[in-house]
Image (cartoon, rainbow, N blue to C red; front, side):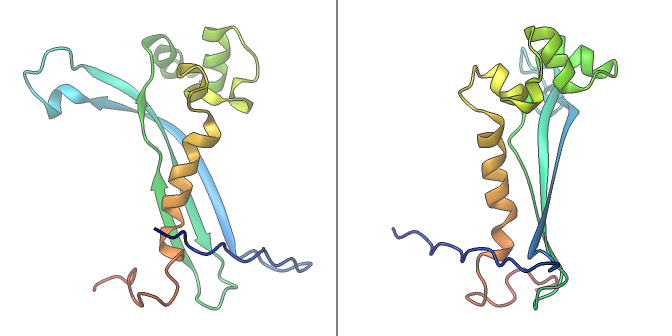
Amino acid sequence: VSSPPAPPPPRRHAGAMPDFAVGVEGGVAECSLSSLHPGTPGLDSCTECFAFLAVMRSPASEAGVAWGVARTGSFALPPRLAALVKSGVELGDADDRVFGDSGSKRKGGTVGKLTRGLVDRTAYYEHAMHLALAPFVHGEEFPGLYDAGE
């Protein structure tokens, strides 16, 4: 299987609009596994952690504005972290308290702490970034692939 060709290097023009803009937002939400699988022992509600990534193709591009959005995988926060977050403590600060560290959110993040570095925050966001870029990798190969209503 051959790899897709490498993208061209970025154009650098003083004052020019970027081709793409990227936003990353982490979050937590309550999940209820027991409601999805009633009667299964051991499945309780949990607080899950995840992030959304959004990529916008710039309005300055010839093709106009377009969006790609994806979400990372999610994982359950341990109850001690979840309780701190629910009380209003920011997740990175909760990590620092629980793990006796400082600046956790600028290091491996929560996912790095919980996996002992097996997955760091860069790797955690990487797959979602690839997925958010999916609408932009086909070019003219499949015209209309991401058009609404077809």
